[in-house]
Length: 248
Ligand code: MN
Image 1 (cartoon, rainbow, N blue to C red):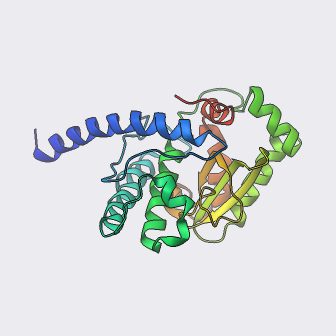
Image 2 (image 1 turned 90 degrees about the vertical axis):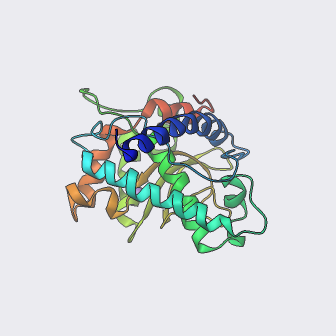
């Protein structure tokens, strides 16, 4: 076995431990409206394994895109976050500490802490697509979406529109705001609605990465096609749990 392979496996084991820790803590926290988000003790941050294989989201998101996105892009955010916090005089205890006081941090901390959190959330809000007629929310989340947007179809239209309207790189979110209402919003770069200076703040229920690196290999300039295909891989079960304040 090569050194690289051994390192990869060792990293994988650590990542799995990390995932269960971050997963429990993050999703517990991410569901609390009081915004006690992300409890991971600071650094060094590690890249958790995906909760599915790189080809699990095919044909909607291709294997190569997923592998590069995870092992190169997300890994870079993790590496750069560790570098960016190294020199801080006072170490923030959690990513949430950073987000709650985001304006006091450098662009490097902001972009990479956001990049790490956003991607961790994104991987876990997707799952393998199933051969079902419709992948749709159910239960209380479905009711809330209908109440807030009129119907699931209208909700999707607004969400997709927010993705089309995001100029350049960024994210689209479905969040629970301070009034406990479901709201669609979009953030530039690696910002997110947890950041204290976000124009729309809230607790994420869904997140969609609309950076070109998330879709360009398969969809090239056709962002709308990626936005349309993404609904096939949304993990509505998890979104529903997040909405109801549950986690696993
Ligand atoms: Mn990305």
